[in-house]
Length: 148
Image 1 (cartoon, rainbow, N blue to C red):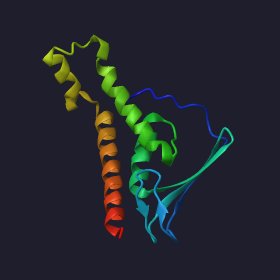
Image 2 (cartoon, rainbow, N blue to C red):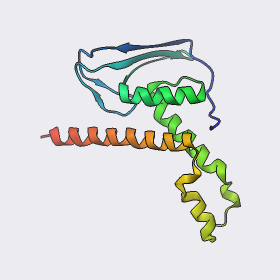
Image 3 (cartoon, one colour):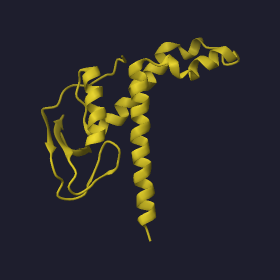
């Protein structure tokens, strides 16, 4: 497991499941649309005097729950993607110090590209990032096709 730096704690932290959306919302996890009638998570927090009000679709919430269980810390919907990337980046570089690798040695360079070198959690976060990016890209394509 990676060692992420979770700075401080929130003065206020509230998350609740909204069973049915009454209007379209933006998912702060993947950037997708939470449609009318869909269930979602509503998040509100205050950190160092700054308030944050966010929403998250249930597929992103599933990823966030798994991440929080493994790291023992809660993350906001808006910070989930950044924490996933940071965790994966740390795991990729923790295996081999890049300064010790010889860029002219083909075997050293292959070590950096071996997907099996990631731990189970590293692979899980890699696929979670890919899933979030795919949903975000699908949303962009849908918006582009709706444009006149």
